[in-house]
Length: 332
Image (tube, rainbow, N blue to C red; front, side, top):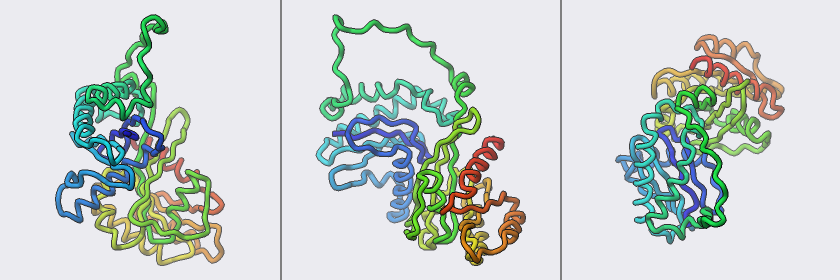
């Protein structure tokens, strides 16, 4: 049975999804995972990322079709007919581009412009004789005798009207710095309100999403948490693309991690055009930390806002991300 369909843009952001099976897959993470694994595979085989046609799991497969910087991803059972599913994916992605292609450059993160497209996905799978693979989530047609009275159709809003009514901002945020400075701990504190004393190094890149409101504005921060190991530098550079901001994190008890921030900053700036940068000194709760003036001095040199946080106590963590969102919104 098909577990779900996910439409991913070139940044790895999930535009919409249609759930069919019982497996719960975070649509905000699958795009980042797919973007990372495709970039990694293209480096291994020194070819186009489309050379990787599927990702095989124990009982399921992840397959996709591409068009116009979009990827339509399907999570299917290993015994499902891949050919039929791919035919359906190609038709669906073409339908989406025909319907919304001209609007994507203005997309602000709200799913409202694409309301109703999930039903078109259902229709395509029914046409392709894949009804048995999605039927658990599609109700049987209601007979005319028992059909409910339809309410008057709601007026269709133009894209400009939607953007005026729904102010949703979506930003890609990079977190970089040496290993064991607390990048992942900061994210876990703001997204899960958790802190672990055990250090588990990030291998490659992790993806997390935080959603909150600032005034009337809805904000979605897509965190790309990069491991500090030097052997992943080639992969990191590919994933820095299209970021809105970068957080340079150092350990307030480790002066060397502050010195290395300039290496991280140059790695980011060498990958694409300049972006908004923030400097964060973490582990502010520990004894033996360096004077705050040292981190402030470096931040001033590169014209970046400076914060000191504690992932353990939560001090300044929420203030950090709200400030980042506010500055990015003002920047436009």
